Image (cartoon, rainbow, N blue to C red; front, top):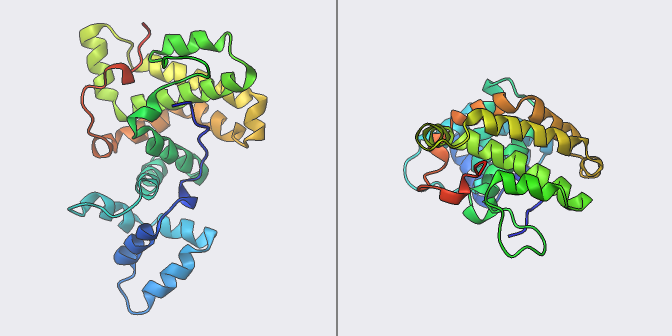
Length: 236
């Protein structure tokens, strides 16, 4: 699947079951349920409600199948751990949550370029492709490499360490360096201004390590995938 231009839009994709979940957690007092529904329709009060730690705890502690959207689930978790790490910008949390929601589907991890029959499974292939790509593809490819580096180093740090120790694969510092470099380059690209992502991409470049470590705090709860094979790009 061709790379998608990810936007910080988790919060506008919440579903009816997400509202029901919020009400079930926070709307226990008489009359509060209707008030919550009205407040959730307003952007400013919605964001304040989503910061309630009770929602975070409920997502982690409730047993059985959670009836919430992936956008809601990832946003609440990411926003909470980012605030703990001193990352207060909701847009950054929204963007990273959307990255997780997209990359939770294995096919979204694959880097497919227009006109190419096979996906690029390794970072060295993606970096080589930058040399001959057109402007738009180069921008999207840089963002994808940054997102992919953050996803892997944030969600699968132990697997990266294992592969580095046992197989001589790149270690975490490689992922941090390549992710930071590509986010910075993407943020400098003129298309970042068009998509209104320049400031966000520069923030991710500057705070890549902080962001990665914040994701480590919830990585065990987010995914349970088998041996990732080609989904963990290496240098070669």
